[in-house]
Length: 195
Image (cartoon, rainbow, N blue to C red; front, side, top):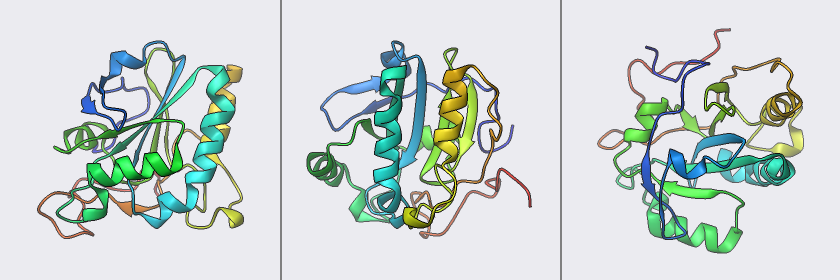
């Protein structure tokens, strides 16, 4: 199996603490018609540069039963800004419309094959993967973005249409893996789209 979940794969289970004081597993989101799980963090400029667009997308599709779940898997030994305490601070300041989970062991990042922050995974009603990759084509500076792939995927999914571009390469900082230098990635981690 490739490093990152292939399209059509069922969403892997998890059991993670959130900034709201609860722990969540996949079943806790069963009421959501569609689920967007994305790997994110506190510090990455690609995340902070595109959070406003991600927020707008989450808010736009909430009424259609789309639930967003953010997961921070970054090692605090590599980047201290990604601690759970800092996650609490970020959510208190920003009030993002998603559940924000902490993957301290990084096992969830490995189960999903998270490559970068942000990296989005869209699951249909059966919790099968129908889109994975970037949110937008310029997360560092969304004033210069030309396409919102995540929005396009959700619009098609909700309309019952095929997703025209179901696979893109995530754009951002790589996940900060425990015990590794900050630019290290697992040997089998690679771009999702060639060329």
